[in-house]
Each structure stands twice: as structure tokens, then as C-alpha cells.
Length: 424
Ligand code: FHN
Image (cartoon, rainbow, N blue to C red; front, side, top):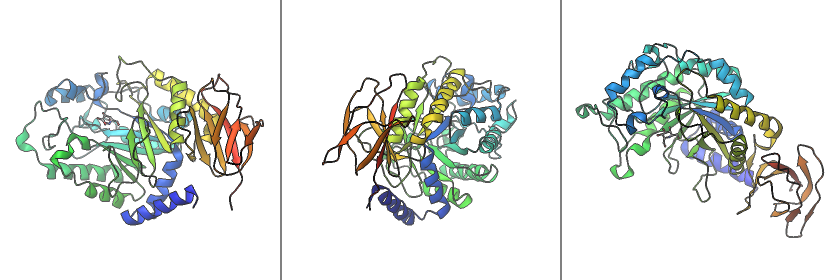
């Protein structure tokens, strides 16, 4: 059975076991084709300009921290402008923190008043961004924290800031109901949500065997929106009810992955998730292109993170990098979107993506002058991408393809298109 058929069979089998709906399976396939998303970590923490863990890292009393709500007023936020920036960058979906560990909701929740509607800004950021993103033809996903550094009911975990906590009020049943209700709000009031991205399971170490009651959360999401994908940043194998796997920071050799499920890896564009005014150490466009290509070659979407500023603007450096990625994708997108993982060439800087009978070889080292690799099937032609110029090749009886590629040092990635004869 060919690789693609095997993957499809595994998807159908695992879906049957997990009871995934047709809409959900379709959404998984579409998600797997997207390859490029933007992650947005935005909340009260932007006001400090020191990342989203500021409250916990500095052990700030949560009642003092909560006063930031009265200063949240990102007057320069323009959802349509953000959405155009992402669209131009070739982004296919946007994942926004609806509520991060600090507990502040970026939407009009009725569950508590620690939310954007009671801040001076008083506008529903989830609604505005969701509408704008969908209007540009992209999908809208929501990050949702399992950890809450504000609510008394949240059961203190290993990483939780304990200052200002009344631990006599801890009540997971109540907190679980709070999450269920907020998920109802998010999945009934904001149009189609492409995915819910859970984060924070690691706050309770496996030793404590804390029961998050995930299945109830997952089933609730699927009951409200069957096509909404569920992912959980728990850093271990998928559990029943999850629809995609995620890895924080790039996929590495030897990581255990389940080929039956779409894969996403998230990465910071600088060194922080939330806005950090002291961190201008952004990856270059060249590095970001390589990251995107390496992820695609492993069958993963890249979810690249930006921390929006407290005034409501995206950092200029982030926009510049997005524009660079967009310019690259306009030319090379065909070799990334809708592709699958290609053959692996260990210990080389050459990676591959595959679409049907076409293999795209990506040469990521500008100094490489020759290359030999094993390509499954009989090679019919090799051409430079995008020029279409013919490249001389030989293929041995053992199926080894020998090339003398002209690597163009002025681009981050020299691509060759290898067409393989269809197999009967
Ligand atoms: O604690 C969070 C962190 O702030 C950020 O949201 C990242 C994104 O993957 N996830 C957690 C750390 O694993």
C-alpha cells in the first residue's frame, strides 16, 4: 500500500475508534494542508512588556496583578489590518489566546468580569479578530488555558503562582463547569472555530494523577461544533477525543508522532510568546523560511508566534518578517501547502516535501554542489523550481538519484522538482 493510502486508512481507522464525525475528518484533512498559521499571545501581560509569565515569574499577588485590567486599552488595534497582514504573509489560519494562564478573557464572557469588556477598551477582541480573519478566507482558532492564575477555584498546580490565593476555595468541579461554560460561549457566539488549543496540563505533574476530565471538555466541543479540532499541548501521546497533535518548538528527530493525525509545531518569532519589549532578537526571514520548510518536510504545520503590543499594534519587526515570508510563499507556496512529509535524508541539509507524484527537494545549504539520494519510484524528470529549467540527473538501478544541483546562495532554499512515474 502506498504511503498516502496507508495514512488515509489509519486516519479512518483511528477516527472510527475515536468516533470522529465526517465534518471533523474533513477539517483534519484541510488543516493538514494549511502548513502555515500565526499564533497570537495577547492579554494583560502585554502591558508589562515582559512576556506572558510575568505574574508567575515575579510571584505577583494576583489581586495586584488584576489591576492591570483597568489599564488595558489597545486603541490602535485594527483587526482588519492584522488580518490583511496575515493574509499577505500567506497565513492560512490564526490562533489567538482567548484566555491565557493569567485568567483574563479576551472576549465577552458572562462567567466572570475579568474580561476585556470591563476594561477601558470594552471591545470584544475575539469577535473582531475572528470576523476579520474569516473575511480574508483564513480559519480562526482559539488557544484556551487550563491553568488560571486568577480564579480561587483553580486547583493550584506545580507551576502556579500562589500569592494572594485563598486555597480553601479550590473546587475543580466548579472550575471545570466554568471552562465548559466559557467553551459554550466561544463555540456558540463566535461563528466557526477551527480549533481549540488547550494548554497547561503540565501544571499537574503525572505523579499526582490529576483528573482534568478532558473527555467531557472534548465531547462538549465536538457536540457544539463537530468540525472544531481539539488539540492539547500536553507533550505526550494523543488521548481519545483529540484531533491533532502539537509540539512546542520544532519537531526533532526521534520524537514519537502518530502519522494518523495532523501535526502542528509552534515556535516563537523572537524568544518570547507574549510581547517582550527587551527582546528584539527576531529570527531572520531566511531562518523562518527554513523553519517552515523543515516542518513541512516532516509533515507539520508551522504556527509562528507573535506577541502583539499593548497599544494594539503588531511589532514592526514581526510585520517585516511576515512580509518576507509572504513574498517567499508567493513563489514557493506550491512546494509547501498541501504537501506531505517527504523522504528523509539523514545528516544532510536537504529535505523533501511530496505532492502526488512530485517530490520537491529543498536544498537549505547554499554551499552544497552535488547530491545523491534514494527516491522511491522511477524518476522521469528533474527541473529547477520555479524556472522549470531541466536539471541533469542519473538514476541507478538501485533507485539512487544523482544530481549536480546549482544551489542559488541568494535564496534561503533552492528547490528542485522531481517527477516520479506513476506506479500501477
Ligand atoms: O506556558 C505556556 C506558554 O506561556 C505558551 O503559551 C506556550 C505556547 O506553546 N505554552 C505553554 C508552555 O508549554
